[in-house]
Image 1 (cartoon, rainbow, N blue to C red):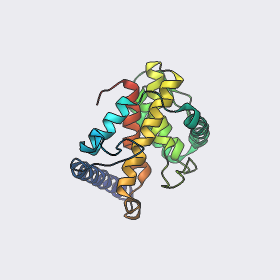
Image 2 (cartoon, rainbow, N blue to C red; image 1 turned 135 degrees about the vertical axis):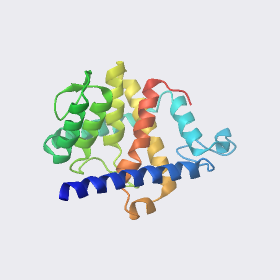
Image 3 (cartoon, one colour; image 1 turned 60 degrees about the horizontal axis):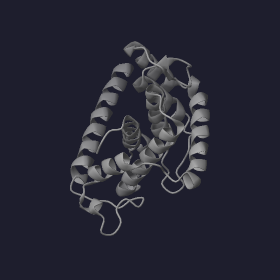
Image 4 (cartoon, rainbow, N blue to C red; image 1 turned 120 degrees about the vertical axis):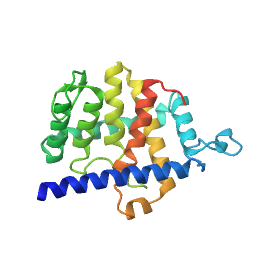
Length: 219
C-alpha cells in the first residue's frame, strides 16, 4: 500500500503543478512587467504580455556585458559542476537516471554524475536532479532562488548537442536566469510561503528560455 500511496501523491502533485502554472500563465497574459531594464519608460515592451516580453528579450539578447557578468557566470559554472558531481550518489538521482536509461536513445551530451553520454533532454534532467539533490547549489542573494541547476543544465546540454561556443552558452544562461528571476519577482515570496518549490516551478522557465536562446528560436 505504501508505494501505491506514493504514486498517487506524486500524480496528484504533478497535476496540481500543471493547473497552478496554467493559471499563472493565463493571468499573466493580461499583465506587463518591467524587469532587468527590459521595460523602461515609453518602451513598446510595456504593451506586451509577460510571455511576449520574456520571449522577445530572450530572442533579442545578443551579447551580455562580459565585463560585469562573466566573472559571476564563471563562478556559477564552477558551482554547477561541483554540486552536480557531488549529487552522484543521491537517491533521487538514481530514480531519474533509471527513468532516462529506460527511455533510452543515443546522444552526445555528458551526464556529469554518471559519465554517460545521452540525448540532451536526458542529460539536462539528470544534471539538474544531481545539482540540486543536496540543496547546496547557488542561492540568489535577494530572492533565494537556485538558478544554476535548472538553467545551466539545460543550456549546457543544448550547447553540447549543437556544438555551441562558450559565448553562446554565456548568453543563453544570462537570458534564462534573467527571465526566471523576473517571473519570480512577479509572484513574490508568497509563492514559496504557500508551499511551492520555486527551484522547480520557476526553473522550467529559465531552462526553456536558455535552451530556446541556443536553438535560435524567434519570439
